[in-house]
Image 1: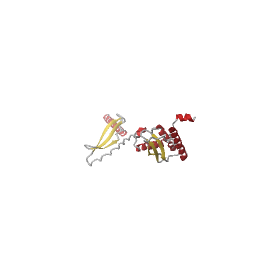
Image 2: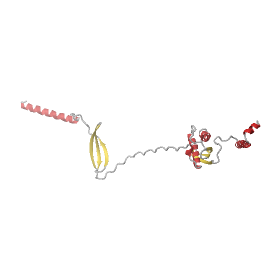
Image 3: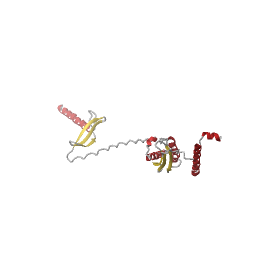
Image 4: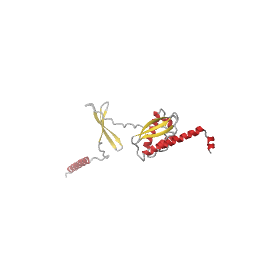
Length: 235
């Protein structure tokens, strides 16, 4: 068995494997845990930088090890996110970013603010290292459209003393006659006010007071005719 292994691996390979095992054992002994799943073997060109993003409760600070093509490690250095909610993103997102080699990973459900803060912090670190975050899946968010300002009514201009004239005009609307009173001069309209239209009467029918007056007048006329007729006949 020993000869078969020696035939497959050179002495250098065996030494390299032994050295890696020693490093692994020392790391476990010092830290008391396995290597961080949010990291992998970095290249010689990789740099380590920090970045900050705005979380739900304060800033989230991350440490990123990357080169121009790969993200090798994402570590959370400082955060105050809500335990059981934001902390889920703190635990899960760094390994997801390293595994996808991209910041365009799904946010952790119920912890979108913290997830966005971690992604923003990683992008800030990449920018600090001189790399373009767009090369790692970052997409600039589209700004919300700016609402158009509500037009404000223009205040009525003050009419010059003695220069404006007031007149009435009328027109026929759906429900009848409309009367307006306009105050204006040769160049400017200062006021337009609606006035109560005169009451319309049925054709051929007079107001009550005028009907009574007309009836009394007709009765007097008939009475005068009867009196004149009686005088003619000597009654």
